[in-house]
Image (cartoon, rainbow, N blue to C red; front, side, top):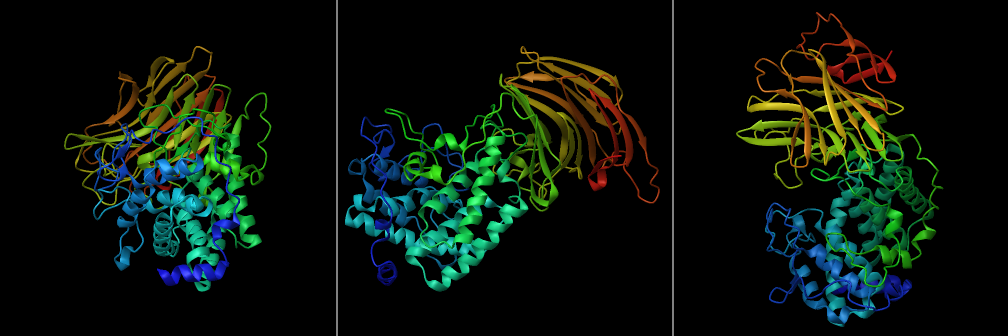
Length: 587
């Protein structure tokens, strides 16, 4: 360790933290975080917030635990508010240091919870370093010598972990890989070598081009929460790095601007569709990333869970010089939005003053992401009154219910539709959009013999709209939602065999479920359903469907190619469709 720190001093000529102007400490008006409320004197760490619980494999569901990201957040908060003397910094840093693995395969990795054993969350080092890197760069002069030494030891060791992760080239997972790569570069400036710098620079150029040109991997730019994490990563990177070449800096500035532009398109309100969201049981709530970059107001309560409080810090580091000004807010929202996603797919949205609806042109956007659909809403709508609607698959197995997207954030560590099938069974969703009208093809390519029930359904969280429904024929039924402000949405569902039941809406607790139920499907290998959504017009007739005769391809009743003509609301759809090939095309 001494050699590493000596090399760091030799390369910089002075302590790197002197390179940055320390943000002015916030005027100490009153404690905005209660440093005593969560402090565990016996352990020397802050406890988890009372409304949260463990998520890692070793601490799943537990509340008697101590999260290290939160503890790092307490430190950077105390530094920003001039209260480090009131926090037991050395004890916190000692515990973080003790929670770093030392074996060669995991060297530098840090547990998320003190109580983790051998199955920690691999993203823990990033979330911890979100607090510790700014602490070292900007506020180390407020630390006692023993705390500064501990902080240097932690960061020099975690660099091994970040470099190892950066070598993995998991560009498709930007929320995780981007943080590991960017932090590897920042820390390598202080603790690394020129050879490592050269390798990291090549990875930075390659990964940055992938995100900017190939549209963000599996779609985290369409996540209200994870797009903000990416913005924090990019912002800290651009503000704290000293040696980044101009062309690479320009590339990552472009990446930040892309994310901010999407945020601006949605007016800082929830994205539809939503990829990687936790809005399973409640209406999604969000704010624009720009709104987070500001000074705190006196007495403001600052949340501290996972992410440290960085908005005030970025504001005082002149973050707004990085970002373009927001686009002027139009008198009426832009009606149609199209956000490019990976592999030529598109997230389409139609936005009105109080209502928004959207769908992915194809989901999943890339192959071999079987564990992603548990938190994705490829077809979704939202009304300002709180109605949050989305299409959802559910299955029952051994008396337990599974769902994509999930019923809850934590209902099961196993987030597939079956506990007995590996890899998890994943359905596909394809859609076309025309001025707020959607037509959606949904296919579940395999049915597990262990399932006793399966359903494709529309779920509405906190429904307030007036609801009516009608059966148009044996295979098509419709529903109409009407809100007090006059907004209307019509929904139709179509099936392709006699197996599924068109169940009427069921309302329980804060949910309305409108299901196509399969509870007796021997010999059926897959399911295919067609959904239509029409804004401001009713769907009053079923589609006209002509199936193709494909004798050369054995077909289940559900998967036959067909041509469709459908006056669905105020739009006439003319389509050629092949469910097996996820083909949904106009003709």
